Length: 396
Image 1 (cartoon, one colour):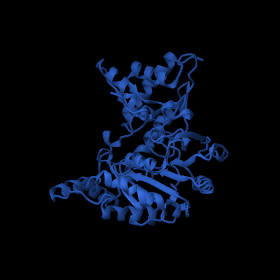
Image 2: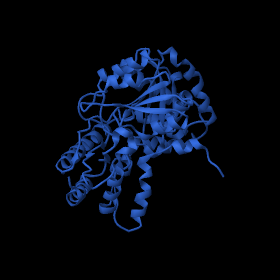
Image 3: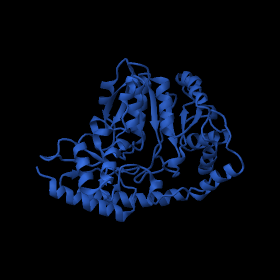
Image 4: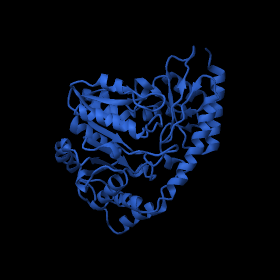
């Protein structure tokens, strides 16, 4: 039986690399997972008040279908966060609750991208942005981010065409951990507004910032067609519970067609999980004391991995300012033909599982991504293995 051609356009390097990991597992040797950004899989656990809200919802039979747009109490709490605290003009009618940010991104791309359209992504980028754009018939271009974390505005302008539909921003960035300044965000919003492009901005790591202040895109949106994606997986440690949301700038009349139509997709899939939405509402309105503890632990782990990697000959890494990823550059030398070959050989030689940088786009080539979520002793052991691997294999 034949499958559609468009399914071949979908790739997700972060989980695709697990095919190689499963082969390694058959050897019976230990595997060190530095590939998936799931804090709950390590020593970051869902706060108790969130768990209690979830279990209480089930105990009280609050597990029926709710509004397709999302439970109104949660939507109002999202307005408080994104409007009152971060500056994006919103009402609850501008909010759509989704089963994770990935579903929200799918709905947005499915609503705006048609065959032949073009989407601009920051290079390197989180793979689903490319996969969903291509799945719906679009093409993508990457724009350069300078070493100091500012976007190359001339590069963006040069890649805008009559078929361009949207500029995507991931802030803090996955996979680099870069955090855009308010000035950089305004530059990208201004370009989008001048060219009638949607701005799709993902702020899932907005509370995980180590150096300086986080600037939300809401503060520079004005009346531009800004669509914000956010959720609860990372900052509220609810990865497996799958709850996210889409917000549409209320001041933008250009977003009215999207606002009137994207909810059709929500109605088709019936509703998001109500008990999880109740837990998400508790997350926003309950104690926030887990956040500084989490950021403090992650900063220590970031500094450990950053120091160790830059001491290894053949590797170079910039210090990330947010999220929990490191994106070292590899000098492939005479040994490896690609970053994918490097990552597979590192896995088979050491059991350290990472992700090849080319899985994050052309501007990710000759890099690999490390997740620094594990406890420090695991990170030290992993860095030791990488160091020995490079000593044994790297040659110029």
